[in-house]
Image (tube, rainbow, N blue to C red):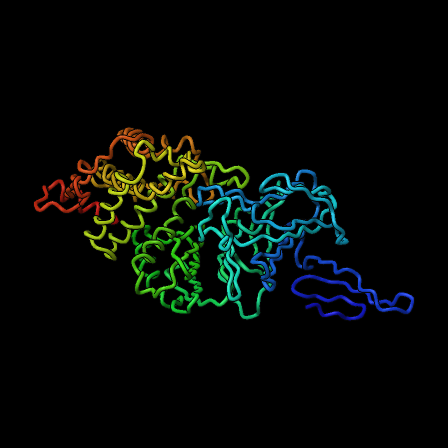
Length: 525
């Protein structure tokens, strides 16, 4: 509802609105059109300013207003994301856009035209000051063109909203590197969980579009809990449809996982991290970001899904190592326009999943039998449920294709087992001095979040950092489709493999060599 006053300026929800109420020939006052503007505290020469209006939730759509300044012909295309980091899939969020419009500084309409699924042409970029559009939530879309997992999508309801920023906010081409500032109008009692920093004016600030796209938000009737481990602050924000789950319930699960990660990594390599939990009608999994993750879980008590919550938290948190600290140029300068595959999903997802299990075993949060049951399950799935003619490199490079998408999930099975075998091989070649964990920590030291490796050269780097024999391992088991040597490798650490049942069990009487390598394998050193 607009609050009209005679001749003056009102500041309402972050916008300045000018009203003129002078009479015309003695008749009723004339109210000039509202002219939205960005807040005085925002310099549009330095930043793009977004306003998302969650007070108006009609039509299950986000009402977005974008303020820009100084656009040129190089910025004439407004781009919505065709894909997003961590999804390895075509998403095409432009299909959810309704009613895209552009205006000059006087709020007069300018021409726009739709060029493609995810692109709109601004006919007068030099005069464009305001862009407005509605974009539908993904969760309630009926028969979507491209399937979007819930943890990578959006939801807007009466008591909460989930915003994956890449699914709501587009950008003018050529301005990815500009700062992005976001204002969110919402009910007064709604809380916001996000890793995005908030400035003194209550706006959220991203250093560039990649940072924005890497920073989801959960809003609404939330609970919050915090954990501090050394210099790392961990926030947990939770929405529960039935209020059966709270952040306090999850806190102890997360705390255990964080101590597992600290023991494995020696220290937590981030100053802050945010877990966003949505408990609702189904469990969909989670999506990682550099300093946060979105978890979509079934709204049943935490006590009934504790193991699942811990595993998913461990997996998503380990992504602070890869790809945050170890990644190629394809991740560093992500292409939101044309999906570009990397060769290294074996690293980003396979090694991550291996670490999620091993770090918990090595810190005594799970037992050996539990770990071996999981490895046996992964072997079973790899052997029976996917096309074994697809190498891990094939899965990576074809992840954006329809046929590749059918094989993608095997990166969590074959990929994790290949990482486990690589770990054993590295321990063997180093006489128990360096396993995969130690090599990963060396890679973090070498690259870190600010330095990328070249996607087509990383295998050579990995071999140079380890042993010549690892070149054969990569060629056979990552780039190639040679049958995985389960029995040969697990036997090195005194674990026997039964190909009939896919079971892994400790041998009853290990040799001295097996016992030595097992002790090194089971420890962080």
